[in-house]
Image (tube, rainbow over the protein chains, first blue to last red):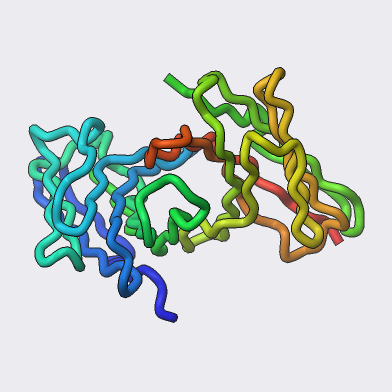
Length: 117
Length: 112
C-alpha cells in the first residue's frame, strides 16, 4: 500500500514570496490533515478535511495560509506571503475515519521542509 | 498552550537496556493516547496507543503505561536496539475529538 506522498521535500524562499505544498493521501482515506512542525516542537494541526469539506481550520492563519482539497483526494496548502516564522516542516496526514475509534490512526507523509529567508 | 508535555528532550541508553520515555498531559478530557516514532527526513509513524479504560498496553518490546490520576503516561522499550534511535512523540485526544495534541518529542539515542 502506497503511503502519503508530499512534494516538494524541501523549499527555500524569501520572505513575502509565495509557496505551495502538495499532498496525495492514502487511497480511500477520507480524512486529510495538514500539520506545521516548528523545530523543537510537536506537530500542530493547521486544517482538517473530511472528503473535500473543511472540518477544522481554527489554527490556520487565514490571512496568509489557504488550503483546498479538490475532489476529496489531493490537497494543496499555500502560504502567501511567507514570513520568517513560517519556517517549519509541513506534514500531511490521512486517516480512514476521522475519530471515535482506533481506526482513525493517522498516517503521515515525509513532510516538506520550508525555509524562509 | 501546551496540553501534552514531554519534559525530557533527549535520552541516551545502552543497547539491551530499558528506555523509559515520559509524557504528562493537562486536559482531563483526553482519553486516548498514542506514541509516534519519527526518523530523520520521514514523517511520524504510529507506534502504540492506549485507551483511558486501560492502564497498560503491550506490543512486543513496547509497553505503554497510563496513570490517569497523575495525568501521566510512559513508554517502555525493552530491550533497546540501535534501530530504536529516533524522536518519539506523545499525542492525545478526546473521545469524540479528531484533533491530536502532540508533545515536543524526545530524541532517543541507543548506544552500541
